[in-house]
Image 1 (spheres, rainbow, N blue to C red):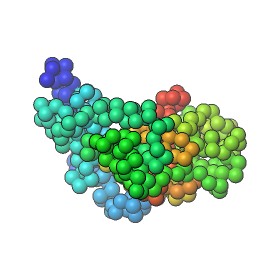
Image 2: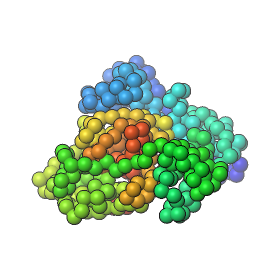
Image 3: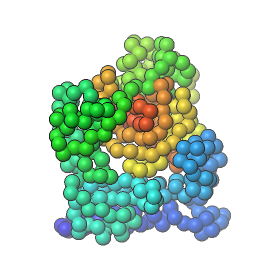
Image 4: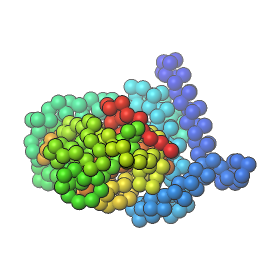
Length: 366
């Protein structure tokens, strides 16, 4: 291993270890008031968000104690993943949160880095293909999207199995392999749909969508809420930018009388650090309210009837028509993205970081 990488890994280990200690202090240990800073933060979250905790209990099967533990563990995992992603560089093979062990699993293509990954508090795994190589294969398929058969509904890099997965309609696996290559794994599932319908929440003509996360001057939401509803403006503002297909994001510049709060539902937004695959996440939508589940594969290309969208994240969170644009957030307040669409088993979201970057927006935080 070269000296520069050794230095980066050493720094990552120190940072990750410090975060792990900070997030694992027992309640009896830390501050002069008798509770740790982590416990105090989670007490605040519980007090502020009764609807969220009820959703975690219903959808994730967690009681109050398990929910508290999960919040602290996943917040520490976010910092560990970010540190190791930088330190491992081109040998980084992806990371995911293992629900069974409640530990972050970090993959590397370099066996000599296993000890450093373990020292940082993660479970190390050696894989054949780096995350960058997997993403390159996704980009190759993206470039050929127009030639894909209509039965192919998307593709993504599965960092858990370290392979490319193509999703296709039932009974069409051979056509998918003919397009993408025999080396890919094919998963058959029903076609994804966009989540827009007439009704409640913020209106665009006779349709409605859901507010995502608030930013300085307005809020972010799904791009198809603008393009699929014609020239109508939102009832609480005006379209300031949108992109669909290709992407599925937009932002609305709100009217002067609209009060903006740094919340998704009742959860105060604390930041926008991306949660690992396998981590628990919740969303607030105007149709289904609070629903929770698990982060799936990232950087997915999804082929809707209206066009393909790349760079999305899959979840098993329950979403329905009208939830489009609604905000995804971790239980501890890290904003993740906005609802795009899906089917009965999958809900996709457009990651928040890209939206903020494209439009130069500043996320409102509490």
